Length: 162
Image 1 (cartoon, rainbow, N blue to C red):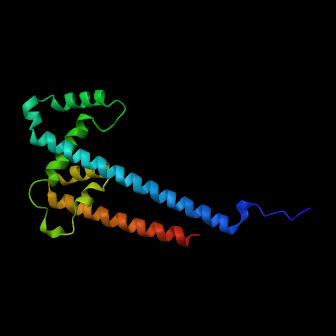
Image 2: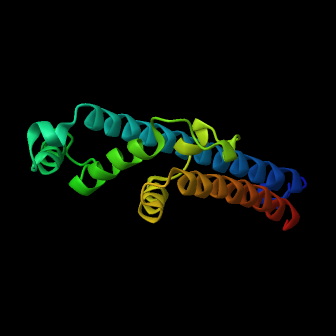
Image 3: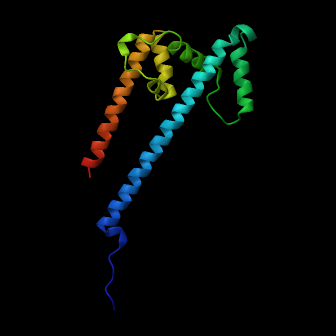
């Protein structure tokens, strides 16, 4: 009888290849999630802009947000994010960052910073800053630094821990 080959799952080269595939897949999933988040935040920005520029609440009355919420949920069944409260946040989001130039203090602030933060974080920032653009930009830049640091540290931990 011939020699038995070692089990493929025990071979170092094979194990390393599986780790590489897994790592690349995880990175791809993260990039996809970030991309989806950016598109959704951009959509929220634009919808908030449309509502604000059309002065919709003044034009359509006090039930505007409730009606819009109901009609969007009917038109887009199963999609979330169209509660009347969330629609109001979209307008606040747009109004907070639109118009005048962003504060001089934060010259490194970019649109990508704004659209790369999860919506729940934006809602917290809106609540905490109460219309203060300087505070809001500070929180966004702080979040960007923390995120960058976490990505760097998670990369080091993953490679060092193995």
